[in-house]
Length: 261
Ligand SMILES: Cc1cc2nc3c(=O)[nH]c(=O)nc-3n(C[C@H](O)[C@H](O)[C@H](O)COP(=O)(O)OP(=O)(O)OC[C@H]3O[C@@H](n4cnc5c(N)ncnc54)[C@H](O)[C@@H]3O)c2cc1C
Image (cartoon, rainbow, N blue to C red):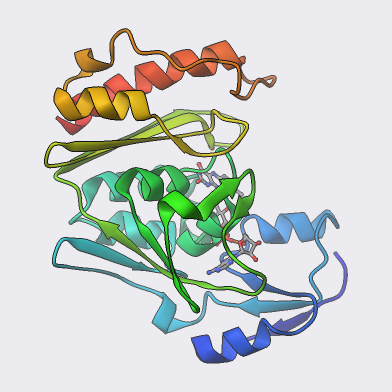
């Protein structure tokens, strides 16, 4: 690990000011960033610790929206997001207890790992990512692998999730990492259904529009029968071929619809 300075801001305003320093980087739960620094693959000169900021921590719901602070841990979402059980269940299956008790929703979304769970939840629910500067719709937030619409120094302060009528996340776990080999989040709002897929695409999390159209007409597992995703742009690695991932997307979508129903 290279040397760095650690800033412990007392407010989001202080954190935003500290993020203007050359080489500054936000520190959430450190579950991704710290191992990367230990391997000397990242060398921020200044770490701005967000996880101690109480104004960034918490889960609340009002008027059909669940709001989660940007530095809220996965464990807290799992135990407190009871108004949105599909999201609570997603958070409860991230990594292991150590990861869930340190990792944060803001860190997960900002990192945008192609196999992470929260990007599927945020895109599948049509969430809004709130930063210290603006609000970004999930449809615009996830740009590419490990790339988001966040600008240099921008801090995820919270996420607003419209609460669906029913929802479910199905993850086919890659057992060595516990990330998703493939994960599918399904959410139904009235007659409108959103389906987001993680772990599968070379472009990162994406919406499966054919499944959304079919499920919006008929919210049943059978409605997905006969639909298929082309394997061409899907991830192929030692854990699974592109064709295997394409197959899993259909299976997990049907399971998610069944579980949500
Ligand atoms: C063993 C293991 C298993 C895991 N399994 C899963 C899994 O099953 N599913 C899953 O989804 N994830 C999994 N993770 C990842 C975990 O969810 C982490 O929480 C996540 O990668 C990063 O969150 P963090 O708060 O630790 O962020 P950090 O590691 O602190 O930071 C990650 C990146 O986000 C930036 N950042 C952090 N917070 C903010 C913020 N509020 N605003 C802007 N930028 C910010 C940092 O600068 C850095 O670039 C796993 C991790 C480990 C180590």
